[in-house]
Image 1 (cartoon, each protein chain N blue to C red):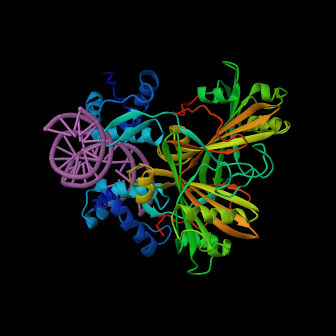
Image 2 (tube, each protein chain N blue to C red):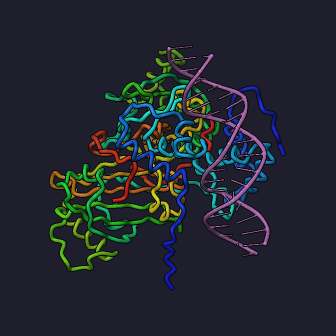
Image 3 (cartoon, protein in one colour):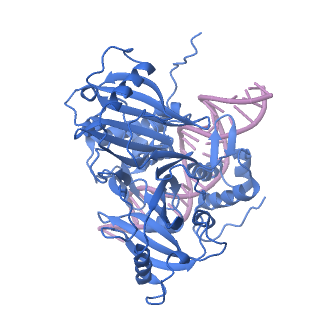
Length: 253
Length: 253
DNA sequence: AAGTGGTCTAGACCACCGG
DNA sequence: CGGTGGTCTAGACCACTTC
C-alpha cells in the first residue's frame, strides 16, 4: 500500500524509495524478518524492479538489509563492532588475538606490498592467510606479508606450508621488538577469493585495513585485511568494542 | 568424495569488464585523462550501457575513476591520505587542525547521538558544522555535538550562531582536560546535505567516523564525520599521512 | 519444481555542463 | 545547443536455495 504521490521535486525515485523503506524497517519490521520479494515490492511501489533494487542496494550498503540469492532479503542486525586498533601496539598472533591462521606460503609479494616493504626486487615473502569470525559470521580475511629477512631463524622445524607453518612464522615474529605501527582504512571491493571467504559475491564492498609493523627501524611486516563493510564497524581507541548505538539512517536532527 | 567444486564458474560480464578496464587504466591511461563516453565504451565492448555502467561503478568505488554528470569520466588520482587518528588525543579545533568551522546551532541531537552522549531527554546540544578541504577538494563534512553542560561558561560573548560562534564553542572545549577518545569507522551513504558539501550525489559512499571525547569521566562531545570514500584513505597511527603506495586492483600475488 | 536474488538487454528521458 | 552521465522501464534469462 502507501503509494505516495511523486512530487514535482526532482528527487530520484530510488532515493525516495530508500527513505520510505528505511522508515518502514524501523517501525514495521524486526531483525531477521524477511521482506516480500523484489518483484512484489516493485509492484507495490509502482516502480520497475531495477529501481527497487537500487534502493535495496543502498540499504544493504548501509547495513540495514541482508540479501541472499535463492533465499530472500532479511532485516540485518546492527553492525558488529570489531576492535582493529588498540592503544598499545601488538604483533599479530599475540595473546588475545582471535584471528585464525589458515595457511602460509612463500612467494613474491604483489607490487603494492613490495613498495611498502621496500624489499629487494624479487625477494620472497612469507604470506600468511588468516580469517576472523565473530558471532558465527566471517567478517574479515587477511593477508600478512613477512619478508624472509624478518624471520631469519625460521627453518624447517615445521611443515613447509599450512596452518602449522603460519603459526610458526607468527611465533618467530613475536621475538622481534615491535617499535611501532600505523594503519590506513579505505573502501575497496572484494576480490573473488576474499569474497568467497567472506560469504559474499565478488565486488562486495569491503573496508581494507593496511597495517605496517616497524621494528629495528624497518618495516618488517605488512598486513592487508579486508572487512565486510556491510556488517562491520571498525573500532579504534581506548574502549574498542564498546557499544555505540547505531543510527542506520543518519537522519538529520 | 572430492566436494571441492572447481567448476569453471561463468564470471559476470561486468566483473570481467571491470578487470579489463582496470588493466587498461594501468597501461594506457594517465591520471586526469578523459575516457570515451559510456555509449561508445558499451558499443566497443559489445555490452549494454547498463552493464558497462556497472563496471564503471565498481572502478569509481575503488577510487580509480571519477565521473561527473555533463562532463565525462576521468582517471582518478591516487587516494588522498587523511590523518584522522594520531597517538595523542587532541580536541577538535586545536592547533594544527585544518578543519574549517562553518556554522553552529543549538538543537536537540538526533537519537543516535543522544544515546552516545547520555544526555537528559531533550537536553540541547551545540551542533558545530565543519568541513575539511585538501588539495582543493572537499573531502569531509563533520557534525560536532557538544552538550551545553560541557561548555557551561559559554555566554553571549560571541554571536549566537555562525562561524564565529562555532569557534567560540571549540575554544571553550579546549579548556577541558581531554582524558581519552575512541573512534569507529563504518561505511555509509551521504545524506543530501553532506552530499552537496562533498560535491557528490546523494547516496554516494562515505566513510563515517564517529569519535567520542571523554573528560571528567563523561562523554563531553561526539563527532560524526563523513569522508568521501572514493577519494580518501583514512590514516591512523605514528606516521599518519605517510605515503602508502596504492594498489587499486588488489591483484592477487 | 518453484521461488529467490543476480545479471543483462535495448531502449527512453532527464539533469547538468560546456561552448 | 549538443554531449555527458544519471535515472527509469519492461522485459528476459541465469544461479542458487529450498522443498
